[in-house]
Length: 277
Image (cartoon, rainbow, N blue to C red):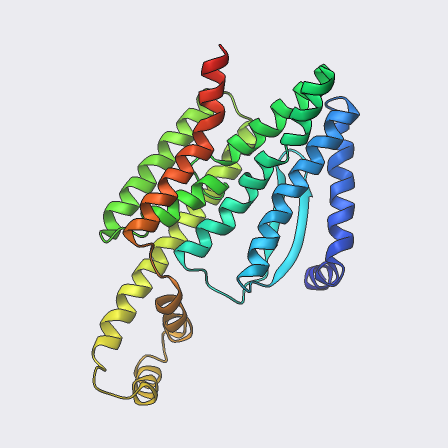
């Protein structure tokens, strides 16, 4: 029955997006003035559909966007493609970048009218996208940082930094009194992504060791021997080729540029706040 529900949701993804957006808007209207809630919801939709646009650009199958009260929204990829590190970074970047830009018309309205409602809306839009830049998966900032750290030659160092940053961020979120439900959900999803990266790392290492034995053979001969000798490990047989081809790390220039881009996107609202104090 659950599978039937999921199949119907996939078949009518736009309708599901519209329905969940409406529910999210109603929930948000119960917390703040309806104009603020509407503009903030539209900004969130721009954020999420920017992810969708980026996913489609690289050939990912999209199952839709769902809006969840208390949590926000998610663009759901349907698989079919493993991202390299550059694509992973750019898909994560698209949301907060366009989310920040969606505040510009609101800021323009604030300058022209001086209405406090536009100040409040711009504040919430910037705050929402700033929160998304927190360096903890599954938040966009976390995936951007993960793409950079998982491109280090010393993968163990990358995992150590990623884990340390994750623990520090969770402690800081706890200290600012974020909702315990949201905190536990983020921690669980962050741990799941971390463990998935670790499994991928181990599979890559094992696949590299296996495939190194077949140097000198043709691709077809190597594949036949590989699938014959390691058929008991279906996960490696099915995914090692895809993982090794597609998990291309960032080069040094890309890593430096993307790190700078992350610092700018995460830091400009904080710098602006300090200047206005």
